[in-house]
Length: 102
Image 1 (cartoon, rainbow, N blue to C red):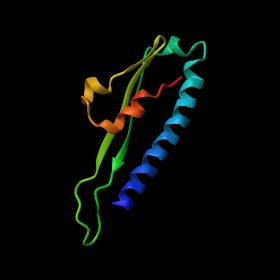
Image 2 (tube, helix red, strand yellow; image 1 turned 180 degrees about the vertical axis):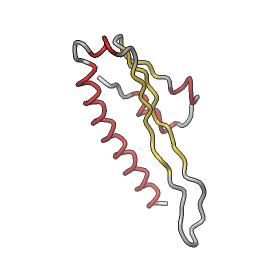
Image 3 (cartoon, helix red, strand yellow; image 1 turned 120 degrees about the vertical axis):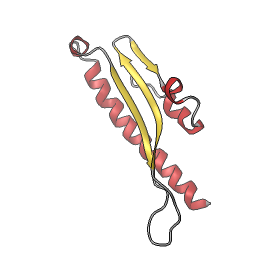
Image 4 (cartoon, rainbow, N blue to C red; image 1 turned 90 degrees about the vertical axis):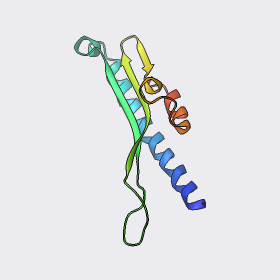
């Protein structure tokens, strides 16, 4: 259905926008000389909340959180932990998992 595709597109664009803002903030802090003296790891979990229809006469179900990214950052770089934790679920997470924080 066209409206569902539009919502999906908009949701992904909003996620991308928020990720870019977060990545900028993370980079600003993790590149400081003394950041890694106080911290050894930062773990990032990103995703969306899927609303499954609510209201009078609207069939639906329980809302759920759909993880799209799980990364661990250290002074030596980053590692993608998504596959280890969530397996290959879902395919729509692939572009978000490939995004680097630097």
